[in-house]
Length: 191
Image 1: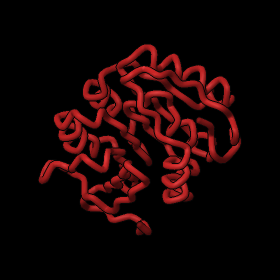
Image 2: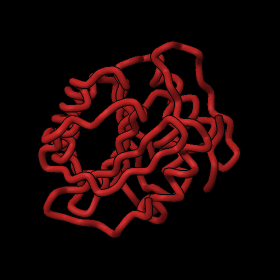
Image 3: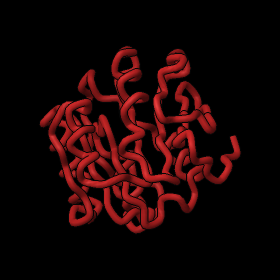
């Protein structure tokens, strides 16, 4: 696993074979970031269920001004810390050890984000519902929320709160669902 583009291009990221960890593949990240394009430049980014931090670190490498990484596992944040060090991007990063649901309220008081990534446990439908109901409070008016999920999982109906599904893109067995605030449609996405 490596950083695909930007200032840290080619940096190898550390990972582990722990069962709880499911890093986004290089190919899927490449597709996602090509799709997002220049939305990343100068963005304030939030990486929920960050695992190795690959999504947030890729964003920093491609020009995001700041990234906040949230995970409940100390071991995950250790991986993120090491990967940020390897990529020389630690000065633009903040690590938060907390349950994502608990962290959302605290983060909402600290300002909004331009891009929010979430890669929750695929089998936990309750977490998915909670995210879709509450993450809109953290999103900038023209921001995007990118939910990574399995092709086998389904989005809960009528559980999106302030969010509207804008577009989806499938990469192998992964689906990226992009949401925007209901009152704000952003530049179109080519699926």
